[in-house]
Length: 131
Image (cartoon, helix red, strand yellow):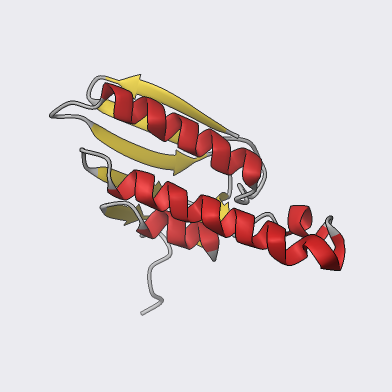
């Protein structure tokens, strides 16, 4: 789901696997746990970079998990994921260091919101205009 490495002054949070890194409770929990580890080691001069493996940075919420609860539980589960994303956003915005999302794959819906919560967002430019 995600890994956290420290390379010199850089914490590298990587969304791993070949899937679309949809924000479901498991991934949200792993990201929050990683951010907690970063906070515990925070000191001047460090930076956090979030990136991904594969074609997707993060492609929305894990709607299949929400839908598996049926019509009676769908909205509750969707709210649960939304609350989790809000918690990640608070975690990122309150880190005492610069944060950057290095987005080389698709970032849609909740995944786009995750990327935008970083202080800086670096995206690929190889899809330039056809002029």
